[in-house]
Image (cartoon, rainbow, N blue to C red; front, top):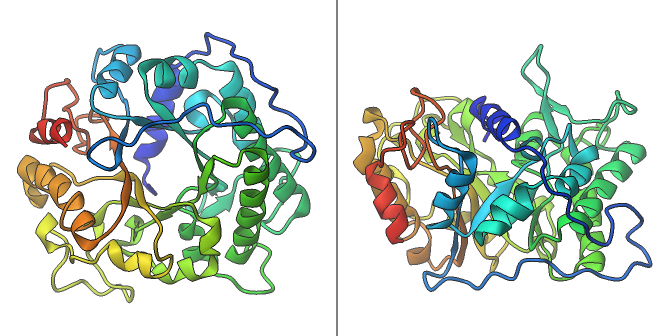
Length: 365
């Protein structure tokens, strides 16, 4: 999401979810070559509405996390799973944490939902706030072009596939934020083209190991920190045949400026301000792909129209902005179930667990 709150989300999940159950599989170590292919553990049937709903079950104040997951499962089919959410330090020990922990087996699948397993190579430099490469301690000065780093990242993804056999796998989150900062210069070891080549290498390796796993990386529809739309031209760098879905995070209320930094004459103050083709135009780069949202939200703040506008946005994003444009909507992920704190307004429920207007609309989709 590109916002500090996501770290708070991860911290909550890490604190509340204690590894309780060891569940085995064919093993989470080894080369992808010469191994028997594995099948995803999830085979969800598409609901009659035509797309899956998902949410991160952040509990309300005083609510047990098990109850939050059970509540989420009454109106959602998937849960995003992150490195920090299962107690991993980074991508390098993610598979071990997935295999030894109880989140996927007990809380997600145990409640009849399926996980979307997310990887990320992006960290933040705490001193400057700029984006930095996540890297294990033995590779302190790695770049995206570093062969040892690339091998470690690829191995981590394949190990995670073997550990929990996901149906949906994201190989990088909001990856175009890296492109927006670093570009793709030929002589830059951190140029975004190095991620694109690694992504496509990983895609092929995952398909060899688990042909039915759906593989993608997530793009940010907005550069939230800069209050503007992202540059969709980055999609031209990817081979559409190696994107099983086009998946976005989207917080369209953040769009206040154009790419030059000038304030827009008509910012997105209400859901109705969002152009009809706001999402559909991205599919011109990867025609025919299903569209998904790993995170999409509108706040319930008065400035943006309050709770009614938040509920209206849900209707707009499943109608006028996608399906009515001929878009094959596949995933609709709301960021979290309950507000993170008294200053948050994104959740479907208030911090005390009481329902907002959007909650009934969400359940009725």
